[in-house]
Length: 116
Image (spheres, rainbow, N blue to C red):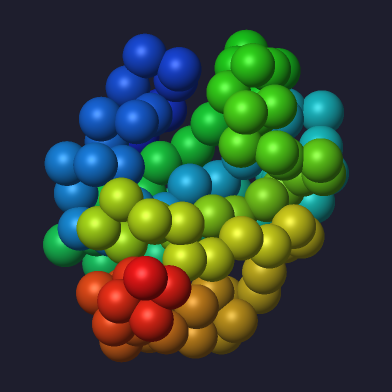
Protein backbone atom coordinates (compact mmCIF):
# COMPACT_ATOMS: atom_id res chain seq x y z
CA UNK A 1 0.00 0.00 0.00
CA UNK A 2 1.33 3.42 -0.87
CA UNK A 3 0.98 6.55 1.19
CA UNK A 4 -2.26 8.52 1.20
CA UNK A 5 -2.62 12.30 1.16
CA UNK A 6 -4.10 13.58 4.39
CA UNK A 7 -5.94 16.88 4.59
CA UNK A 8 -7.99 18.73 7.16
CA UNK A 9 -10.98 16.99 5.62
CA UNK A 10 -9.85 13.38 6.12
CA UNK A 11 -7.16 13.49 8.82
CA UNK A 12 -9.29 12.89 11.91
CA UNK A 13 -11.44 10.18 10.31
CA UNK A 14 -8.35 8.36 9.01
CA UNK A 15 -6.76 8.38 12.48
CA UNK A 16 -9.97 7.20 14.16
CA UNK A 17 -10.93 4.54 11.58
CA UNK A 18 -7.59 2.71 11.50
CA UNK A 19 -5.74 0.95 14.30
CA UNK A 20 -2.30 2.33 13.38
CA UNK A 21 -1.64 5.42 11.28
CA UNK A 22 1.75 6.97 10.55
CA UNK A 23 1.79 10.58 9.36
CA UNK A 24 4.67 12.36 7.63
CA UNK A 25 4.44 16.16 7.72
CA UNK A 26 6.53 17.52 4.84
CA UNK A 27 6.97 20.29 2.26
CA UNK A 28 8.31 20.22 -1.29
CA UNK A 29 11.04 22.79 -0.54
CA UNK A 30 12.42 20.74 2.39
CA UNK A 31 15.57 18.77 1.50
CA UNK A 32 15.38 16.35 4.46
CA UNK A 33 11.70 15.75 3.57
CA UNK A 34 12.66 14.80 0.02
CA UNK A 35 15.35 12.45 1.36
CA UNK A 36 12.91 10.80 3.79
CA UNK A 37 10.13 10.35 1.21
CA UNK A 38 11.52 7.18 -0.45
CA UNK A 39 12.28 5.62 2.95
CA UNK A 40 8.72 6.34 4.09
CA UNK A 41 7.21 5.08 0.83
CA UNK A 42 9.23 1.84 1.07
CA UNK A 43 7.96 1.30 4.63
CA UNK A 44 4.39 1.86 3.42
CA UNK A 45 4.88 -0.79 0.74
CA UNK A 46 6.43 -3.22 3.23
CA UNK A 47 3.73 -2.76 5.90
CA UNK A 48 0.53 -2.94 3.88
CA UNK A 49 -1.56 -3.61 6.99
CA UNK A 50 -0.77 -0.13 8.35
CA UNK A 51 -1.85 3.28 7.08
CA UNK A 52 0.88 5.69 6.00
CA UNK A 53 -0.33 9.21 5.35
CA UNK A 54 1.40 12.39 4.28
CA UNK A 55 0.50 15.99 5.06
CA UNK A 56 1.84 18.69 2.75
CA UNK A 57 2.39 21.47 5.28
CA UNK A 58 2.31 24.15 2.56
CA UNK A 59 -1.19 23.13 1.48
CA UNK A 60 -2.42 22.19 4.97
CA UNK A 61 -0.97 24.93 7.17
CA UNK A 62 -3.89 24.91 9.62
CA UNK A 63 -3.65 21.13 10.04
CA UNK A 64 0.10 21.32 10.64
CA UNK A 65 -0.47 24.10 13.16
CA UNK A 66 -3.20 22.14 14.94
CA UNK A 67 -0.82 19.17 15.14
CA UNK A 68 1.81 21.51 16.63
CA UNK A 69 4.33 20.74 13.90
CA UNK A 70 7.16 23.22 14.32
CA UNK A 71 9.77 21.67 12.03
CA UNK A 72 9.69 19.26 9.14
CA UNK A 73 9.83 16.51 8.41
CA UNK A 74 7.87 15.41 11.46
CA UNK A 75 6.71 11.83 11.83
CA UNK A 76 3.73 11.02 14.03
CA UNK A 77 2.13 7.70 14.85
CA UNK A 78 -1.39 7.15 16.09
CA UNK A 79 -2.69 3.92 17.58
CA UNK A 80 -6.40 3.45 18.25
CA UNK A 81 -6.85 7.20 17.79
CA UNK A 82 -4.15 8.23 20.28
CA UNK A 83 -0.88 9.95 19.42
CA UNK A 84 1.82 7.52 20.56
CA UNK A 85 4.90 8.90 18.75
CA UNK A 86 6.03 12.28 17.43
CA UNK A 87 9.51 13.23 16.31
CA UNK A 88 10.95 15.85 14.00
CA UNK A 89 13.72 14.93 11.60
CA UNK A 90 14.22 12.44 8.81
CA UNK A 91 14.76 8.87 9.97
CA UNK A 92 16.98 6.34 8.23
CA UNK A 93 15.23 3.11 7.24
CA UNK A 94 16.48 1.05 10.22
CA UNK A 95 15.27 3.69 12.71
CA UNK A 96 11.87 3.89 10.99
CA UNK A 97 11.62 0.08 11.18
CA UNK A 98 12.29 0.30 14.93
CA UNK A 99 9.57 2.94 15.37
CA UNK A 100 7.08 0.82 13.41
CA UNK A 101 7.88 -2.24 15.56
CA UNK A 102 7.59 -0.21 18.78
CA UNK A 103 4.23 1.24 17.77
CA UNK A 104 2.93 -2.22 16.86
CA UNK A 105 3.97 -3.52 20.30
CA UNK A 106 2.80 -0.50 22.31
CA UNK A 107 -0.21 -1.29 24.52
CA UNK A 108 -2.25 1.88 24.14
CA UNK A 109 -5.09 0.48 26.26
CA UNK A 110 -2.74 -0.07 29.22
CA UNK A 111 -1.34 3.44 28.76
CA UNK A 112 -4.84 4.93 28.75
CA UNK A 113 -5.74 2.97 31.89
CA UNK A 114 -2.60 4.21 33.63
CA UNK A 115 -3.57 7.82 32.83
CA UNK A 116 -7.03 7.41 34.36
